Image (cartoon, rainbow, N blue to C red; front, side, top):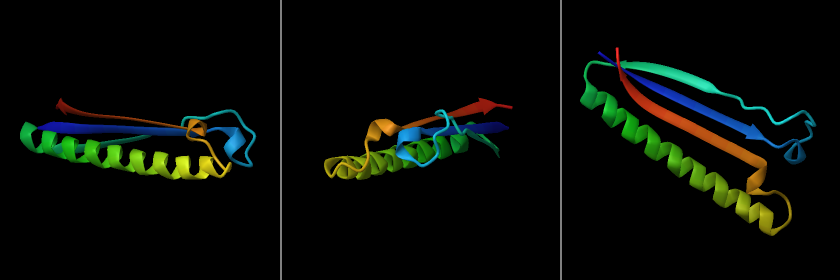
Length: 87
C-alpha cells in the first residue's frame, strides 16, 4: 500500500487585500491511498503537472494586472509538495 501526500499552501500579502493582517500560510494537506507504487507515482506526476500549470496561469494573470498597476506577483506566495510514501 502506498500513500500520496499532497501539501499545498499559499499566502497573500496584506497589501494585496483589504485584510491588513500579517502574511499567513494557509496549508492544505491531503492523503490518498494507492494499491501500488506505480499508481501512486502516476497520480503524483499528474498532480504536480496540474499545480505547475495553475501556478503559471496565476503568475501570468498577476503580470497582466501588474502592467496596469493593480497587482504584483510578489504579493502572493504559493508552495506545494507531493510525495509517494510506502504505508
